[in-house]
Length: 407
Ligand code: ZN
Ligand code: ZN
Image (tube, rainbow, N blue to C red; front, side):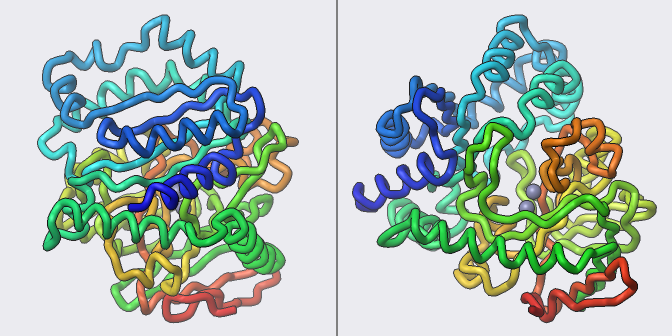
């Protein structure tokens, strides 16, 4: 891919993605296989007057070795210096950029039960820091094609061809065209208009049905509203958490989901695939989880903690989105979730509560926002998907028909 185009993309992530402020610290999480692109992002961050840019590199094969050789107690321990670091981030609120490039199968063979146990140990210690930072910082997830990922998406091509093809797909769906920043302004305005329409309806519950057997009703929180595209941090800084993003989303009422839902795309969870699965809900909680592939992992996932078996997000994405129209299965949630209607298990978004800055985190959770150590999106949209909004005045408004917006 041409360096000038990649620089445009790096600039989009820095300016429009996290919107780096003068004098702000920037944290970049990236795979070791992406030095050239990370360099561009770092340069753009300094051009935006970042005070300091820190890159945290990861290398999936090393993670496997660590998991094999460390005890659960060692893996789950949070050292004093780590707490200091977390405190530092709470104090200075860096802009965080996550560049995903991972192999969707990269953690095959890793002992996920061990990882889950360690996570359960460290989570309660780290949670106060993540709660303290909630809503205050700018963050952005964007993608860079790793070789193994590109080969998974385009198995018939050579390594170089596959990477080039995945770059094209990432840049097209991320609206990196002649003027990406302007394209994003336009796109954000479109999403805001959709959300406004949905919010005027005063939806009490959403009823999903599809030919694959999906028949699920999910209750809404009266104080919640649909959000989409860019958002504003509690510090008043506008940023775009996902590049790309096509969804209008809301966090549903914890405890209000009845029926069954079938997945329509494989889910890459912690480097392993779960495919062909269904979840049956009663009183908001999953009471039965079945999968053709990865059933054990699916059950581990929804039993990570109490909230992991409850919904955290309902997102509406038409089958006509640029990602869906590319016809590519990315095996990566950032893209696949933006190609299809999805739900998420686990933590909800407190910023979907109207004027959430006026409430404490606890108050948002009391209103019905779910809390969990996980937030995992999975795809449920398909060409036959219908969604009816059951409104507070008793009326029923069809908002999705044959997989696309009905308005
Ligand atoms: Zn989503
Ligand atoms: Zn999500």
